[in-house]
Amino acid sequence: MVSETRAAQPSGRNVLEDLDSRIPTNFYWYLAVLACVGGFLFGYDTANIGSALDFIPYHLSSFWTGYLVAGASLGAGAGALIAGPLTDHFGRKTLLITDAAIYAVGALLSAFTVNAFMLLSSRTLIGLAIGADSAIATAYIAEFAPRDRRGQLSIIQQWMITVGILVSYLVAVVVLVALPHSAGNLDWRLILGVGALPAILAVALRSKMPESPRWLMLHDRYADTRKAFGQLGMETTEEEIRTAAEQLRGTVEERRRKRQWTKGVIRALIVVCVFFIFQQITGINVPFYYGPKILATFFQSGHDPVAAAVAGVEVTAILGAVNVIATYFAFRWIDKFGRRPLAMGGYAGMAVFMLVAAAGVAFFTDIPKTVVVMVGFSFFITSFAIGVGGTGWLIQGEVFPTSVRGRAAAIGAAVDWVANFALIEVFPAWQNAWGLAWVMVSFAVLSVVAIGFVFKFLPETKGRSVEEVVHVFEKQAETSKAPV
Picture 1: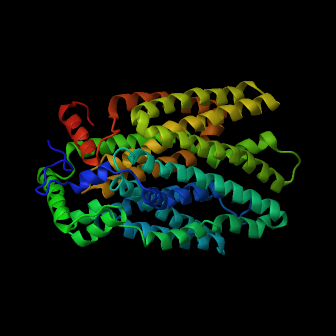
Picture 2: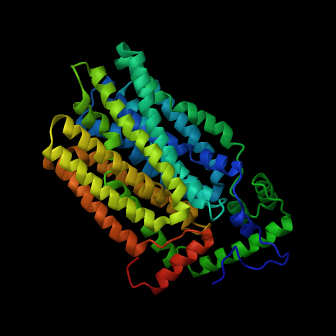
């Protein structure tokens, strides 16, 4: 099988091959950051509720309290599924602009809410926008990123999530310290509403970003494709674009005749979905969602609820900073060492250091307990950030063919959000039934199982064009007797 970006063209030039071989300019990095603003908003919004939760004045049952914390994740699952067919039809850029606008509305409604129903509804609306954005961002990046830097550009999604988490804690600390007597009124509204600012900025900036050239080519928009290539620093002619589009469309049509959702595409989708499930059920979001509550007891002095909240948020902010710093190493190493080694190493580190944290909870007290748990959590998060977090979003964007990339990536993102919601919703009951230490041991065991999954089913995709990656999964599907 000949890669669709390597097929010979009459002019002697293959514009998609040129795109895949470019050295990224500053504009490429700017586009990747702009595409991943949704990651920042996800990180900010899922973490800020933990800082504001104790001060929201509405009386909620345990179920609706859990929904307030994790409901955005459930909404995100629905948003991702809705976005899939829409982005394949209307384009990546249009949906990215719409998502940012919806998020801005949801954040403002959260800040100015007048009752519990309005607050819960606005959180769900925010979730829809976040989920849709997560389904599109890395797919968009994969369609313009050079093959040798696709990992670094795509992993910005995970880095932006970590920055959003950290910023949410910093904003909460500043607001609570500056306005300690307004915690039950103005403070929590500010914490929830500040997220509207980057969303509004994203709407303005995304309106000037180029559409995905691969998507434009598949929709016969050759003049727009030429303009998009120009913004990416490539001078092309419409004839060159037309020839490349015919090659791309020929491969797509051949796949459609066989069946658009081929065995290879289905295999890739299952691998992405299972990777995302392991990414969540191994426990990464427990320190971030419940960290202020769990860790506040280690550092709290006195009985002032605002002081206790600040203590918990400050400690969790330390873990957020660790997350941001560690993700930098994923950014540097993902295209150097590859997806498989980093993922397996990341899960191995998560297993070891979650056991360290579990030992701290079970066998130590006072300061030694605090030190051991913080060390365990810090290196657990480091392992995740380097090997697991960004890898999931990267493969979600690079393993599917252009014709179904939006829909397939959306399904993967939806699975990720639903798994996240399920774990966060069940964690309090799980902790009460088993105890925190045994829940941590369970996370370590699941991390070991994840290593086996990556080793057996995730192929190395480093240095391949997105079309070549699709071929790898097709070949595996033809030769494998496994259900995936």
